[in-house]
Length: 342
Image 1 (cartoon, rainbow, N blue to C red):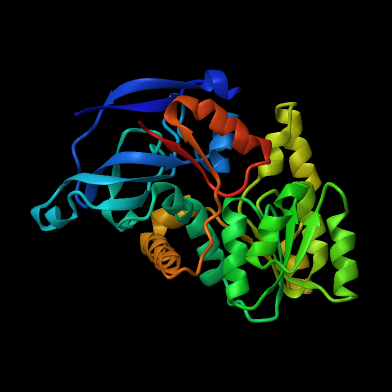
Image 2 (cartoon, rainbow, N blue to C red):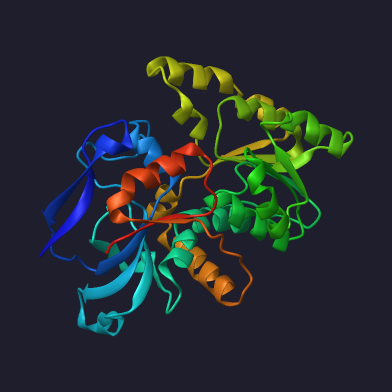
């Protein structure tokens, strides 16, 4: 069977990086399904991959994309025939920018009538937020957390999940227009890092106390700042390196990025009783697919029960994939960016 997909053929500008190509689908293996895709979601890792900065990405030419919404049109065993024509949200390890995608059955959850645009945030971004708030370590009521990029795809859901636990949330944003979004989501203190220093603002608000946790998708210069803000028993969670994407000088930008993070020997973390955690849902999906499935299932349930607010985000036709990439890279978008096939 033939299908079409957007291939990343060269690094750099989104106007020239992608090419719509026809390809031949391979046969299904055990526990796989074939999905006819309605829409796929964008994640910042896609921007990193387009710039040649994401080590996990396959070699060129390749098809990016981590999550899709679509209809099951083929299964590999008769016992799964009941899944035919079901609408599902599926996580895929690349390959999502296609009209047809083969996925693992245990990486998919049924979504019923939920719109594709409302379901896509519950994939990569939602499961990342859920994993960090439910699996990584125990979070207690009245603890204090900093959420970077709080109006972004992971950030807005993380704010909501933390508030469900009774956590005091400092929400960091870079665009004043996003403040009202965070107010609606229940953030306790909203900090615009472009108009105030987030470290001194948090220190003043805490009045000598320390944060219990920070969730950071930027790394770089923010890494040591966050370490200074968390106290003994505190945790710094890194789930991205978006600051690296701002570099314009190739290897020199990478070296500067590493230099800004500095060195934090394990013995120093031990003496201060601080923890640094790294989160990559690609790796979790590979080694613990049951966690991915449980996370997406729980998120769909919370959404159906009205316990989550799905931000409006942006929707683009597949013919405007380049525009969708530019919007995500700009840092001015909020919520999920979805790309729809006609």
